[in-house]
Image (cartoon, rainbow, N blue to C red):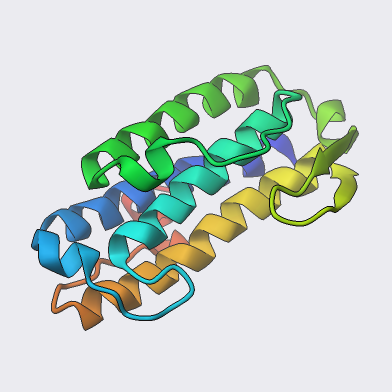
Length: 166
């Protein structure tokens, strides 16, 4: 794993989040809130899960150990969640810009918010996990958008690469 790949992966993830956000914005409030019975129930709650997970991992990377979810997790609408996700991206990108290749190998110690579990892994693996986690849930969102009657958008890495000349 190298630093340029990590940075590209996060540029892709931000691009995919924004594309998906446009598909979500085309839904009605009722479609966004509809309970589909999945692990995060609705389009809104699944998008909130992505935003809060990226927030929590950034806080952990900064050396913080959040013990509860931020208030906006349950109160923000889609626009508010999108803004929180953008704040995380801006701060994370500033940290990524200062990161060295050696930093990717440094051990990262964190405590899971829901389980009484502490884990240690390299910073690079943590960064891969966060990007992969968001990709997984964007796939769920595409399915929920379709079930709600909307039209999901392509968020494949290959589409990003073709659009950005990579």
